[in-house]
Image (cartoon, rainbow, N blue to C red; front, side):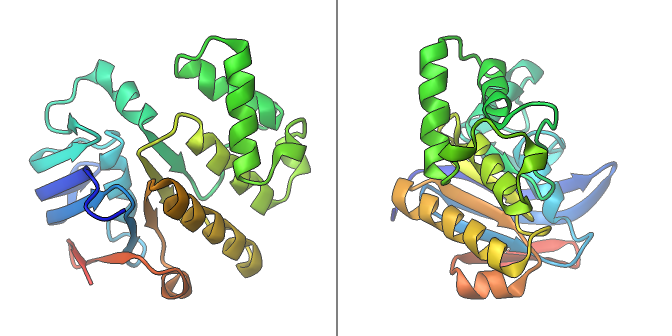
Length: 225
């Protein structure tokens, strides 16, 4: 989707990890339809960028906007609304282990303001179908493989039709073949729906095979390569 609207933009931003600045002078723009990798060694600030995007880490210097929200001035009560416009996928899945797949997804919908049971069931069916997991709706997470759990995590990220999917090492705990399936899923969502994807990874073979823009974190800066 060429020339889509800007969904994430940083200009001369300092990215913090705890009390310390880990990246100086970040300039980054993500538009609808972009697939952007953030790469670099452990501890170079990749995840801190994701935490800044979701307003978990404060932006103390420079400019930053995400889905129309100014990260410098966003109010605490508006942070949940920002996060509803983002889908976040983690390396360790972060599913509720005492609830079925369906219950995991309905929990998120209720937490983000959905009330109509019919609408919730329909949406859960749609996202499970999109990730090829409609037949596993009544399973518990421990009954699923790692790849299946990550597919459920992606379904969860899709529930509120996000403008951006943020994926933090989503293939880090998966074998190469399973990781391949997850990448095919993410690139398909990006291509077919125009949903922007920002993915943190240190796996060079992934961004060699699945092309996208690449920014590298190194020596306290992050630049496009």
